[in-house]
Image 1 (cartoon, rainbow, N blue to C red):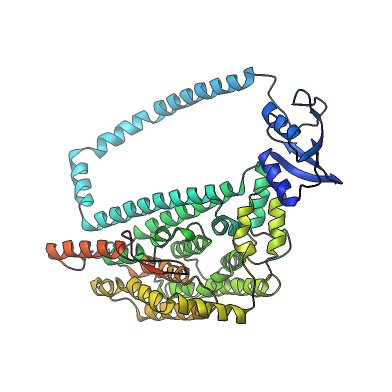
Image 2 (cartoon, rainbow, N blue to C red):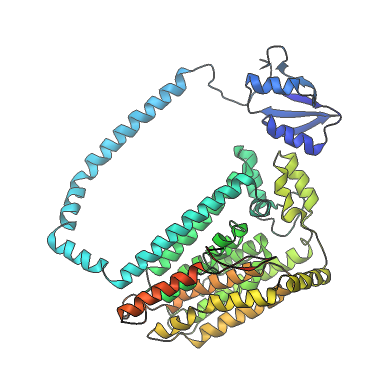
Length: 510
């Protein structure tokens, strides 16, 4: 259909009206006339369009009966005039599901009965009970339950963010190459394409991307934990308010692109590519470049991949770092591009493109309208914020609290962690020190370090599950009870924000 808008309707108002009237695929015709695909051809919606003071005229609309004209071009096929087809399809679905379920049960029932009989035999049941009551199994089950609880709360916060169109939580994912090559634009272009192709709101697509990433992270953490004897002190470090609980204490960071970093750290630790293969080098190069094009901060955390290679004991012989150097090279090249050619986000132009697609204007109020400034001015402004908000007291205190579980953790292991582990983590932290002078998100930087360190510990420092020992590091039952109480207090009595005023806070009692 064609709509000629009133002269008082500007671009922003037109975008809001397009969303209100379910008008998609806008195409400029001439003057104030635009061509649309009408997704909601109901009488009530067409009446609202015709009677709106913002609409001067329409085409392909019966303005007296409030219906779409029969001569209007349509995107089909449509089944509106063959009402029996949907009912027949629904009936067929029920029939086929029933028949398929019955056939499946008939096929697997004999084998299932034999498996159940063998599983619940006295000998098998006794062995199963003995394996389940070990402290290692209970610790792994506790970690699995904790991951599930954190995932559930994270999912709830993601849903709230998708509904409210959080500008940083959603808008940062929509930075695209529509206005030219810019930093952080790699994810936006395919997301915007998907919104047009499938007529889905961008909040919904971003929401499911975030859910998929966090689910993958939880599964990878559990897969890595299955190989190791999980330590209570390590669990306190992993689930600390500066680790997995950080986004739940400060929901402003839920769904941010940090998720990509966490998933890549865990995936790499689980994968640990073999050196000497050119396909592996190409793949790691692409991973480094793609992640940096998504967010340039990734480059400063690439030393953790070298730490993983140092601690990896699988290769026999000398350690070769070709995959890590390839990943570093891809990230460095991408960083040079985004800090020169793509330094300007063209925020207002990108915002106009989003409004033209009919998206909510709130999506522009995050990174797209974040004030651009020089590095010198940014450092000066951040220095003022650091003094006013007591950063130099709050965040070092939070860092010490985050590292506190590692003290008893190191003593509880039968074999002490390699000095290379501590040097590598310290070196990785040192590489990001310049970032603390040019960004306000100190909490996010600490969270990235804690999560990367936790993944390295989980994959390479924790002892093998077959190694005998106590997950508490002590044998007396009352000391174990005291440790559980201390860990509970540790996890619930303090928290940090990603930035700004009052960065150090109480925990769940705040």
